[in-house]
Length: 440
Image (cartoon, rainbow, N blue to C red):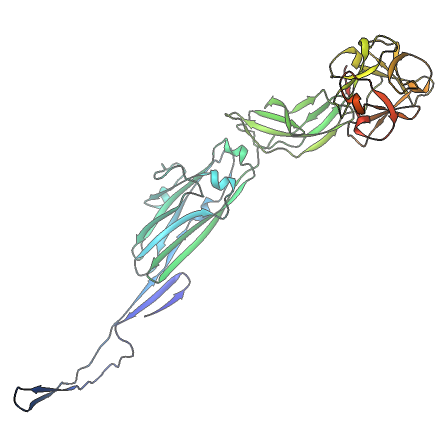
């Protein structure tokens, strides 16, 4: 038996005899010897006449092809959630072809595992339209659709209608995701086979992600933002504003601006925005590109809390912040007047400020010789003159250093609530690092 392979077609030949002569004369002589009981052997012989031998040869070609799979390439959008296309499998050989049409994907992307896929037989490619009613198995994806099988007579063909679709809701989770799809048809008979492979790429258009945020204005406690709407606003119900990874606002689709307030002084915050689609749970688009925006420097007219980064407690005037000589202590942050402080430019040296609580405009932060911080009436001494020094750029953290070059400090047991703060040699530690927040 011999076979040759040309492209996808395979031709094979069957021969009843090999190395035949067209005319073969055969003369056979046979001798039989019989032995009879009690006697000599008897002999007989004969000649066979000359006889020609003939042989016949049969040949067949196996070839399977497919066309049309490229029509399933698609870019999904709000107005194009489904793609339908015919795939024609044809036996172009001369022998029957048992075939298998396998559908799948090169890699199991989120689109390949989510898109709904239907496959059914139609009488002709013209019957495979976007409005054709699908039949056959449901609940399949490009990773689970499997293979369709059958046998085609020589020259026969079959048409499969293939439909792939996503939902409006899936546009949000799958925005920008692609899948490379494969269609492989193969035919096998004995040791001979033929195959054909095609591919198509599908992508979900990233048309639901808003543009990145821009800062339109800022104060020492707020940042105002704006952004552009996505290119395809169909099915978008609103936007989520995300600050440092946390959703801080959910807005209707008509809103493309937001003011984020209650922020720390001179601090960068990273903002992104994503669009939403009404569902349970809510569908969200990918996040817009992240952009960092900063609040402004403190003013000399607003009131500020002073919070330590280690303890997360605020500097507070004891005794309600109204009694001269009362200690400055650490306590839980709240909106009380004894925690709200104004930075008043020192009249004798504008490089420094005097710090006074809202609870009493006649008292000021002071650090006497024992280094324990208290409230005291105004006096032109170094212990009441402070510089508020930013640490780094846009970190929102500060060191409070007096004119004696000592820094406000909450180290040791002073990390506890209601314990007195002090000043100490500046060391850059967290115990000397504070956050300012506008209290109004």
